[in-house]
Length: 92
Image (cartoon, rainbow, N blue to C red; front, top):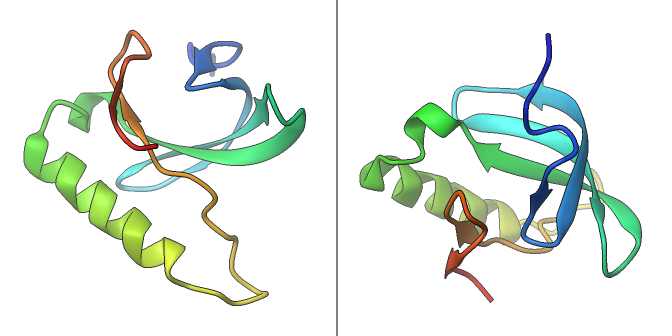
């Protein structure tokens, strides 16, 4: 199945491959272009991205995940919300 996000640039990351998906979003292996390293990038499902309540739930999930400090859990390094054009709506 072709994923149209593969090869696109989002918030300084080039999406390389789809790793998995869940109810809230899709996780990709992406290349952080400034740091020149691979990262896991979780994106809200496009069909849910326009729902304000869903975006808030996604943000809350990221804040909770970022508070976890355990060697067995992937560490959250950054959270931001951008529109389809790459304009940052929330985040650093």
